[in-house]
Image (cartoon, rainbow, N blue to C red; front, side):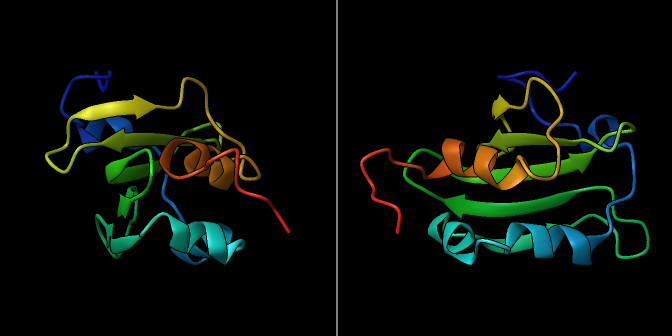
Length: 117
């Protein structure tokens, strides 16, 4: 059930509804990280009751999709998949809102040699 190497099943991964304006504000809080991922093709599963958010990324470490779900404990679960939906990496524990962007950045783009301003 949604393990590395399997195809993602969004029905079993989703739990709670995501309020999209809050999620987008969180992802874009550090806009330079968001754009460094090459984020595009932002997708939600249903406009009335959003339980899944997906974006396509083209970063240094990962090229494919990033799926974001909200668990019953109000923690984010993130899956990195190929463009065909095969899971390549995922969170082992839920992420608090202040950990979400940094976790995605570490897996998609972050390079330690870059200097921060």
